[in-house]
Length: 386
Image 1: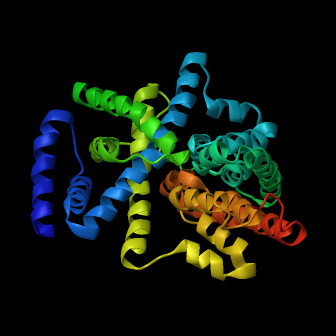
Image 2: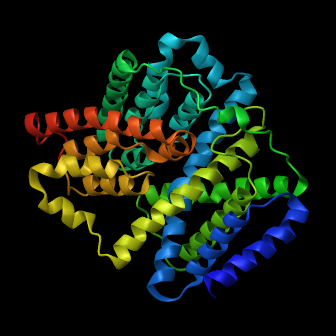
């Protein structure tokens, strides 16, 4: 099948589905069909694509969905809006944002980024949450090395607070709103979309079991491994189908109910995550990328390499760095540098809403990551190291 065939098929699918569920976006349908072709391809290409899709779903999507569901469910149940909470307590924005970032997963940081886009928080709050977050790698560290997590997460939390307050001192555009949140319409939840939301929500439950098992490094084989792959592919393509007709630009309108908000935002983030995971898998499969070999040869530059890997959007590479630490391949200083520098999946909506802010926040978080990681590297080289 040629690219022209895929494009023509996408236009036909777009036209057909549009009559049933509303306006689809041809380019997004084209990308979904291309993804399907890559996943169905024989040999290394298909294997790498399917591996990337499974890792994106059970390693990222299910945890993003869980944390967003908890936040939005709490908002609905308790009758509050996190953006209003930030606006009413400007003095507490930075520590609150850092706390939300320090929570395992990326949901808290994603919500702070959304609050910035609507003018509810300062740039310092964004830097605080992105500095404090360890993303989904925190789940792995808590599961395998809770003694390290109980040290690293509070350190990241405190560094986030300090960094956020410093940025607010020097940043002159504290409440710059991109306006993107204000233009997000309320989602028209038709019966087909509601069915898609329910399907996606139900798939998240077994996906969480597989995701938690993966973080605990429990490997499945045989039938369970095949079921895991099938579940991941169904979950991915269900989410991508929702995304292909979504009006959401990055974040949902707070007036929507928790289920549509969770599914729409998770699908949006997953679309970016898939690109990051595919790039990583393809570099590994076809270009011979070997992070373990890289870490073993860089010497004093080890914390710097870990920080640079932290610049990569998403949680996949960061989970790998944490795995290297758990297996004794890198010191605590490198893990800490990566944890502070990485922005997890929260960087994706930040890029979509305001690329300039995403770039500046990443650079700002790199400075404390460099200082703290090399402080541990030189002053306490063997601290919490195997």
